[in-house]
Image: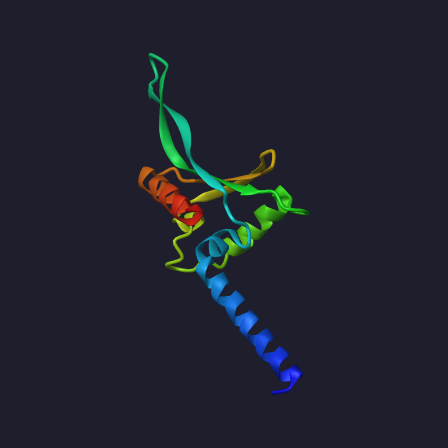
Length: 137
């Protein structure tokens, strides 16, 4: 076998190995593009439960997902990319931002960005958090 054929076979096997590795990481890449979430926390808001006594309860409204900073990545760019991805949502992808009625915002947060995915519906907020934890897992 010639040296050039040997290099060609090596190149093909390298491409196939990297493609199968990319498939293993598909959930995070599908949901947050090539950005890997490092952690997730519940997104809670206060709602008045007794107006006369000024009592407020914290209720789950979705999830905060942290995306570590990368060179050249800005909150605006991340938001635009996530909006573009949301426009091509796939059924069965199990992405938190694909929950019906979910809203998305991106804020700079020190060494990265907080992506907040929220819903006004309690069951949908729980589903957003569940999916976010699964994707970041």
